[in-house]
Length: 129
Image 1 (tube, rainbow, N blue to C red):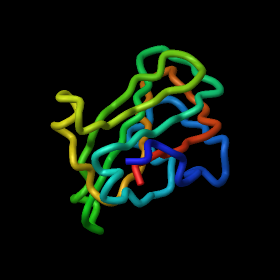
Image 2 (cartoon, rainbow, N blue to C red; image 1 turned 120 degrees about the horizontal axis):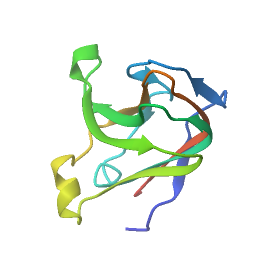
Image 3 (cartoon, rainbow, N blue to C red; image 1 turned 180 degrees about the vertical axis):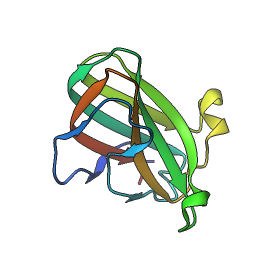
Image 4 (cartoon, helix red, strand yellow; image 1 turned 45 degrees about the horizontal axis):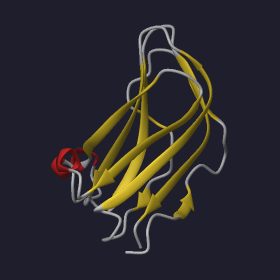
């Protein structure tokens, strides 16, 4: 294991803004998760603006298929303020083992409540290579 390092900048047209009352709005391109990354993976999201009234969640979904029904939700992270929001998946952490191994294709989604909005200025994945 060489450790985590950035392998891909996901958002090409950042920033991305998600307005109120959105459910599972896709905020990243689909990306590949390599075999090593399926056990050691991190996604970092830079939140440049957030108005939180009821709740904002960032959700990682992964799949091994091509149809919409094959996407599985991994973790969800709550956005409470601006700054860096991270999700880590590490096979050595017992609580993460429920989600692992991650499937080979992923995407990041965002759900907002009434009165919420969030602007994501960058999304970066890091995975073991």
